[in-house]
Amino acid sequence: MKTPTPPQQQQQQQLILFHHPKQPHSRLFILFFLSFFTFAFLFTLLSTSAPSQTQAAAASSNPIPAALSSALLHYASSNSTLSPPHLSLPELSSFLSSLLPCSPSCNLLVFGITHESLLFSSLNHAGLSVFLDESEPLSTRLERDSPPGTRLEAYDLSYTTRVSHLPRLLRIAREESSGECRPVQDLLFSECPVAINDLPNHLYHVPWDVILIDGPRGYDDDSPGRMSAVFTAAVLARSKGSGDRPTQVMVHECEREVERVSSEEFLCAENLVEKVGSLARFSVPPAEAGSWAFCRQRGNETASLEEEDDGEE
Image 1 (spheres, rainbow, N blue to C red):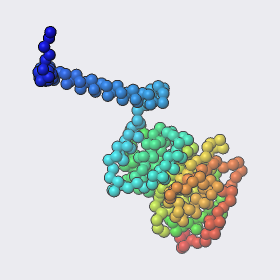
Image 2: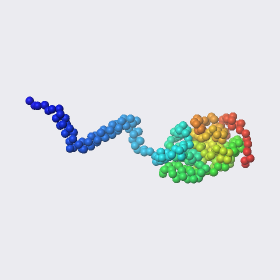
Image 3: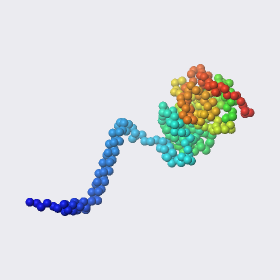
Image 4: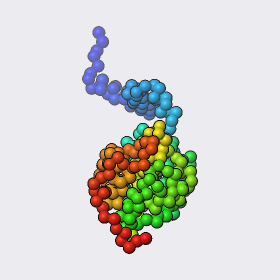
């Protein structure tokens, strides 16, 4: 009969086995096994949660565009105190929703260069993005810093209007609504004082999908004001072909008098889609054949403006 091994001796034998000379190799094997198991588990989890093999293959063959990755790096490294967002998150969401029907290859025109300009062009990374600004250095820098392959153009623009000119310009626009200030025309040859007719020629013939008006300055009487930008955007939208979809025109700081009155006069209350914060979004369709009016019915507030020249020529 075999004598049982005392419990203490068993524990000692187990301890000797635990400190086997090949311990480092055992630990490496265990580490490798755990790593492989973790990787396999995560891979299985991600694979089963993927919508489809087709979508997964499409994602792997379409890496993040250079413009978008550059924008992400730009905002990730920006100091939010030194470079605060110009538009709020709800306003940016409204802008994004206007891009969705044609994204990522829209024809996007933006009046004003701001902290979000790179983001705007990145969201439209396969389309044409054009920025117009009073500042030549800002325009030059934006084009210089845009990622290679991006269809981004930036131009400096000199405005001849002033905020204080609004009543006189509004009066002239109404008097010439079937002439020089008509809603359907080639602005390159326009003599309307509220029109912008000195842009690069090719921009007047682009069927713009989205136009954002966030410039020029308009915070005092001597600022250029945005009445010319609003009028020009309205004409570009109304002059598109009859089969083209409406142009989404957004006006920032729409609560100010110039922006509000100009929008009511040229973009029209019946075209207002939504107002989010200080951003008003209009869906402006091409003009109907034989139409010489911007709006079917003019707002009461616009009609009641006093027609004053304030001593300005």
